[in-house]
Image (cartoon, rainbow, N blue to C red; front, side, top):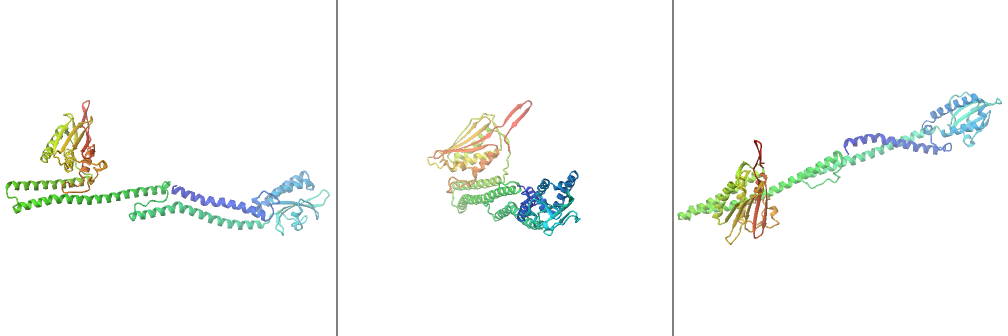
Length: 503
């Protein structure tokens, strides 16, 4: 519920609840006082006007009744001698807790209930006392008097008497004052409790949750229902989104620190091997161990090879940093597939031949097939995959082999690089493109590797709008597949529409 709605409800409740409870209390107190004064014998209907203002209500009621009687007497001057008419008047005033008495001279001519009259009968003034309006008797009854003459000339007086006590108003004020104070207290407690539970408690919970965030505890969840509507619900959902993002960020930071430590460890290990070799062979040259030109040239070639390994490792680390910051420099150009991959294979073939690894190459695409790609980065993809295959080949029969195939798939080309090495376990295949993932946790100087080569490959291929995957069988070998879209020109009148996959 929105704050505005809650404030509106609170404002209305402050007014409406006390009014409703005060009215209910007024009706209840009225009934109680009527019962307490035992005047419910006059009427079962509660006249709340007589309860709250007996004097005013009685005066108004009797004033109207006297006028009606006087009008009736114009037509029938002796109507007040008619007991049926007097009984009718008695019934008319009964709902206002009143009754009538008629005196003829000093005797009672008419009274419906002597028990009602006995308390006030001796307090009534006689004929011609000139009392105007209503008056109170000693017993605090309300009385209105109407003098008249009987048909035989005797003096008569009609008294309209209210059985309600004037003290009822005082009691009503006392009771209502107490009730209103109680009602205001109850209303205050109810509204305060509601506000506390619906606003202050959630805010307190949110404050506790924020303290957990401050302390670095991103697993603490708010106990209150986050599906609540309004501002508080939005605050809870925002907190939960923030908590999840901070938790994700913290987890990523921990994972990144772990990866960086692993990278430093890997790089340190991988640098140590060529540095040790360079140091050893250069020391051999300085000390004259290589005592003939042929041996010296061998040492120099080894030193050069190890230096190249170090340079490749540093370049890989630099590229990793660019990937981490999403700032790989691309230079997209149109490439002829047959020419470009032919050159790549020729370059790779020479290196593999020196390592006594057989290379098979086939291109099944058309001679005019083109792609839009960065030639340097695609070459890096090929080299990384081939280097990975060579690194983990581990054959002892001298039949190491790598197959490179270029396949045509209508609007794209698929490049397959397959080796006949030891293969990859099925459980490891989904993870081999993750950074720092190694299928063999044990490291040795022969294999080495920073663990980021295939993650770089995947990033480059995806940035070209392609995708990559692997298939493998343990003991038989591994095949890497990646797809790149073709460059196609559509004739559209005099214009050419070029479709490429530059990112």
